[in-house]
Image 1 (tube, rainbow, N blue to C red):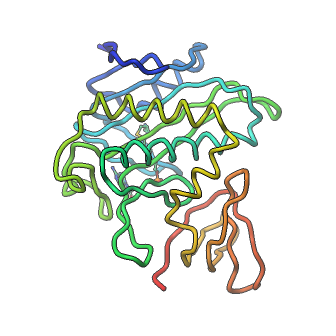
Image 2 (spheres, protein in one colour; image 1 turned 180 degrees about the horizontal axis):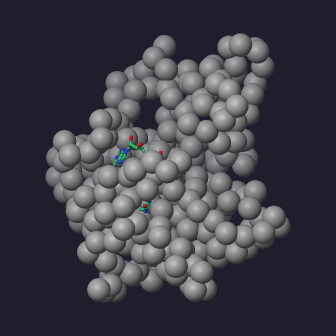
Image 3 (spheres, helix red, strand yellow; image 1 turned 90 degrees about the vertical axis):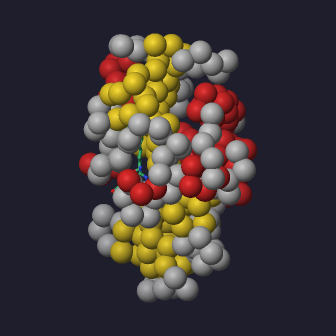
Length: 250
Ligand code: BTX
């Protein structure tokens, strides 16, 4: 049964020992009209990533979904995903771990100097609304907190492995939600904050667009969060709103 997770955060937190996916529970809350509710679980048995991928979510992680009803157009919704990436990265950094952001929304730990990384956290935003108005938006955030990377997919890391000790999840979730609240209250500040934490800018990248592949140097991110790549093939700057991005070795 759900219990309240008593935090001084600007959100009501509903805690579960285990759920299928906190995004699924959040969707139910959202369609019931809730707002500023957070669904938090110790373990997910059916955690989801983007594009129907699986998200490993054993007990010990921080798996949560924030339900909001922002007064924005759907075109601005990607800023909520970037806000979550900024908030998560800041919360991890406050714990002394050097987290950075890989475009668009992976929180990673750099390995060496050439853009290589291990993935610490991921974000999955879902939304319902019309063309001119968001009705609700759920931001799912998964952080590999008090776990061993051993049991996770290759390329993953955890706060336990990076910091050498576990975090107090209550303190961490509180920090994360406060950072998210700050970021969403200043949506125009999100992209500048994102740029400062980005690992992707300046990297050679391969971006998988649905139609074709783009290879070049990641040079900027636009005010709506799209990646600007100086393309090897066309020699032009091309903008990608969404897609998977891989850092290439120089
Ligand atoms: P993504 O599609 O960017 O990443 C998914 C990929 O990452 C997988 O295909 C796998 O290779 C790898 N992966 C899976 N699990 C982990 C893990 N624990 N750590 C590192 N890498 C992993 C990212 O999707 C979005 C993830 C959002 C997860 C949150 S948790 C709370 C909420 N509920 C829910 O079901 N999803 C969100």
